[in-house]
Amino acid sequence: MSLLPSLSPLAIAVLLALPPAASAHSPRYKVVQVGVAGSVANDLNSSGSVVGNFPFSAGVTHGFANIGGVITDLGTLGGPDSYAAAINDSNVIVGTSINHDGYRRAFRYQAGTMVDLGTLGGNNSGAGDINNRGDIAGAADDGPDSALEGRAFLLRPGSGMHDLGRIEVPDAEGTSSALGLNELRQVVGGSVVGPYTPPESMYHAFLYKCEEMLDLGTLGGQYSVARAINERSQVVGETSTPEFRVSRAFLWYRGTMRNLGTLPGGDLSSATDINDHGHVVGYATLEGIDGSTGLQVGFLYSSGKMRDLNTLIDRSSGWFVVNAEAINNSGQIAATGCKGSTCYAVRLDPLP
Image 1 (cartoon, rainbow, N blue to C red):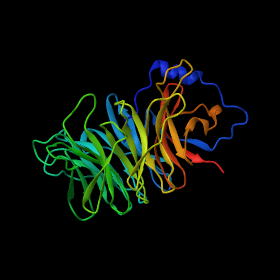
Image 2: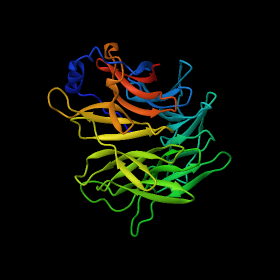
Image 3: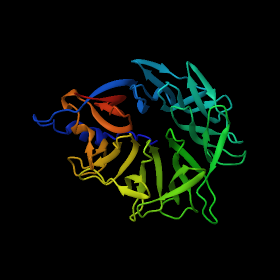
Image 4: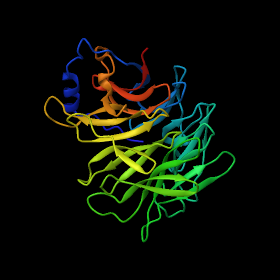
C-alpha cells in the first residue's frame, strides 16, 4: 500500500487553478465521501464498504471502517495508533496496530473486536491483505533481533503464521513483505535480493505460489514491489526503470512485466490494485499549469489506456482525486479526494 504525501501549498494552488471540464464532458463516476476530514481510503469490498485511516488526535492515527454508511473507529491494541489495510466480503478487517508495549502488531477486526495475530517469533508484525477465505498476508519479525517486518507470512484460519521466506539469491540477506493475495492463496509483495547498491535498493516484486517465491524482476532498475493480485493471477505494482528512482506502474502476467506508462506530462506512476476485469487503479503525476510534474492524481487503467480520474468525475462538484487505492469488480474505487486544502476518504461509484 502507498502512503499519500501531504499536499504542498504549490500543489494546492495548482489544483485550485485547474480549469473546469468542458461542457461535453460526461462524468463516469460519482464521488461519495466515506471518511472524516484528513482521512484516507485503503481498500473496499464487493459491497462498497471502505476501510482506511483518519487523524484521531494530534499525531495519532486510527483505522476506520465505513460499512453501510456508518463510520466506525476500529480502536487499537492498547497503544496510540492503528492502520486499517484491507476488508473482505464478510466485513473482516486487517491491518496494523500499536500494542500496550509499543510494538506493531498485525490485527484482525471482526464484530467490534480487534485480535492480535502475533508474530513469527519477534516483536513486530503487520497485516497487508485478507481474502474471502479468511487467509491473511503480511509481514512479521522472525526473531527477537530481526528488523521490523522481517519475513512475509501467510496465515490461514485455524493455523499459525507460515513464513514465506524471501527470494533466494546467492549471498543475499534481508527482509520480505506480503501486501496482497487472492482466493487461490497466491501472495504478492517484495523481497530484498541483494545488498544496497546506490542509488536504490536491490528489492524485487514476488509472486508466491505452489510453495515457491518467484522473482518478477523489474523494468530495468533495481527496485520493484507487487501490491495486488486478482483471481486471474494478474499482478500490479511499481518498478524502477534504467534511469533509477523513476517508478512506473506495471502489470505482470504469465511471465511478462508490462509498463503501464504515465499520464501526459507526468514522470511517475504506481499501481495499487487490479480487479478481475483487469482494470487497474493507482496514482501518477502530471504536468501542472506552471510546468511542474509534481501534481499527484488518481488514475484508472483500462482498455490499454491510463486516465486521470479527475477527467471521469464532475469537476463542478469541487472534488479532486489525488490517489486511488482499490477497485472492486463492480468498478467502485476507494480513493482519497480533496476539496480545497482538506482531503477525505472517498468512494467513486460508477454512473449508469
